Amino acid sequence: MVKTTISLIKADIGSSPGHVTVYEPLMVRAEEMMEKAKDENLIFDFVVFNAGDDTELLLTHDKGVDSEEIHKLAWDTFMILGKEAREIGLYGAGQDLLKDTFSGNIKGMGPGCAELEIEERPAEPLLFFAMDKTEPGAFNYPIFQMFANPFNTAGLIIDSKLHAGFKFSVMDVYEAKFVDLVCPEEMYDLLALIGAPGKYVTKYVDSKNPDLGRAAAISTDKLALIAGKYVGKDDPVAIVRSQSGFPAVGEIVEAFTLGHLVSGWMRGSHRGPLMPVSLDYSQCVRFDGPPRVVGLGFQLKNGQLIGGVDLFDDPSFDATRDKCNEIAEYIRRHGPFEPSRLPLSEMEYTTLPAVLQKLEDRFRE
Image (cartoon, rainbow, N blue to C red; front, side, top):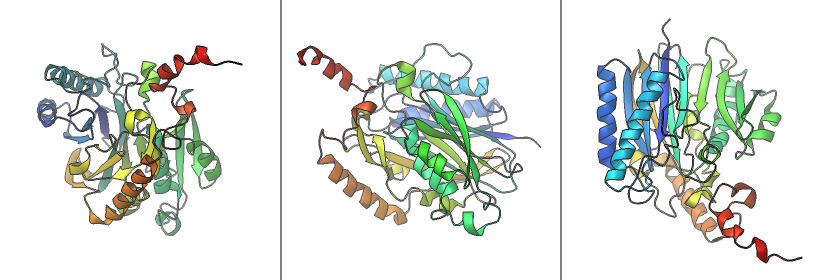
């Protein structure tokens, strides 16, 4: 059976004003370039959207994960958009493009990437999530909720197709090492790691049923580790399969109803609640936030994305958004004090070290 690859690739190529949102004409330009790639049969289908100030390219094709052709398409698109952003004076133009020359793969070059290669089921629901103003570890909590917590996902208890659980591949982003942990058997070990989202990040989730294969993929690129300094937040993306052996759509989106605290927000140096919003409200304004997540849902058939839905454009998330605003109001009142500001251990790759350096000689015994 022919396999379909789904690639979700993002980059901050410039925004207006400041870090608020992507300039609409650049979105249109990206759509034109993707349409050309579709006409040339490089890709099956595409969607261009934004999460705050990040341009998101959702592509389907048959080239497999880590395809040089697909990654070059995304890289060339981002480079052109970054150049045009600089010409019109957008803020942070080409911010995520940390290398000058494409080297065959977009990994380690700045843009974030999540990819799945699957054998399409007769009905294949796919959900796509993109965050702004936060780090890859922000997905640890909702991904755990979806695939390991029966209080969130009823199917783990009452659906025989899910009852055996799932395998999590967790990455140590500082050591570039992976460990695989199965749930429910190793749930406590899993939580011991992913409860520290600044270091341990869930990269993949796999069904224990080999016929179903991979269930989710999350981008884990940390810009500061690539650039060696603070150049903006990582703003991760994720692809999640749903139904018939995977969590239901409703169980997946339920994982975003807490408004859990994540690192990032203003200058990448603060904690704030992750607010699920529709595409119309993905612009980050208050204190450059609070951090946002947007979600899109499609049916996939023969590589075509069918019937797109803006998942968080739903009044049932109003209570979560109200709670996020209340949390944001409370934590902002702390000003420069922890826990609003991140602890020093997490500020190494922000702009704070340059401020502290000038005080080094003034400390005395």
